[in-house]
Image 1 (cartoon, rainbow, N blue to C red):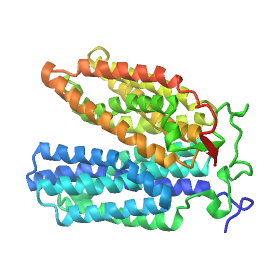
Image 2 (cartoon, one colour):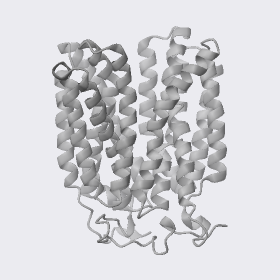
Image 3 (cartoon, one colour):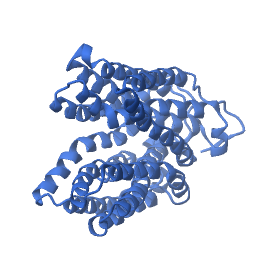
Image 4 (tube, helix red, strand yellow):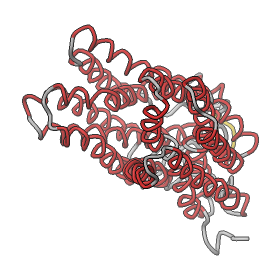
Length: 426
């Protein structure tokens, strides 16, 4: 058994969770966008059924978050990661062998695969980092969360190549998902450790790391010396400002993923650049995550989050005014939107861990995630409805820009909650 004096397992765990999040969070989602396109053509599924499958998938992510938080609290992140991989495995097998109709597609992909991704990706990964790190929490969080950005760039072309290599048989794509989730489930079972105490270690591998000072002069970053219960955290102003700021970055991001290509095409942007914009946005999101991680242990994450939201607002401006800027607007939009989303995403998980401590982190995230994702899920539909009425996205995009700016201001007022009777020792 490793001890503090030998070597700190936390950084090994960061590498393990990076791989788990990459496999469980990207292959059944970004990879499925490629597979399901081939499936829809082969099985003659309508575009509405295809879209509904992804909608149900998103709703499953949101509504299952409390269950994920419960599993982590009761059984730990190793159990939750492993079960998530196994559920994705079952879903992939069913997709490859049983699904032959629209309703089965919605049921299996939307609910089964969606539940597996929820249990095997974001919340357990964020909880693992929160449990194992205090002083380097933001950096560790950024490394783990950057996996989905890398996965988005790597997984999509890989999945398409596999399907093409098997004579355009979409089942080959699900076979790849099956193989990858076998790996992730095995890796989670043998390599994930719930807490540093399980190995006789302490957070960051530094004696005294389990009871950090509330704020150090060296870092100027607040970290709670204890943990807030779910009920107590929901009674603070800070948590609701955090929820609003999360909605303020996620609404523009998911709307741009859904509609930016159509918007750019309608304005005469070259097709190659239109397609490239999503890849660029994913790439710049990695940069945003790593920057937020590098700064987040020295600068209050709410300030980083505010800058990220202003960047998101700038991205919306460049997207709206493509006609004025030309092709350069696409690169500026992708940078501002991608970097803003990445920085905000890392700041969200970091600030919740810093303010409310590790003990109830999973329960808190499992409670606020459904609110954030359900509200954000309305945004793409509202933008599309606006387009149907006015023939463009201008009004919708301006609303999202204002939302980002409002969130940027609001998060600055999310000061750490006052310590008191609701804070319990770690």
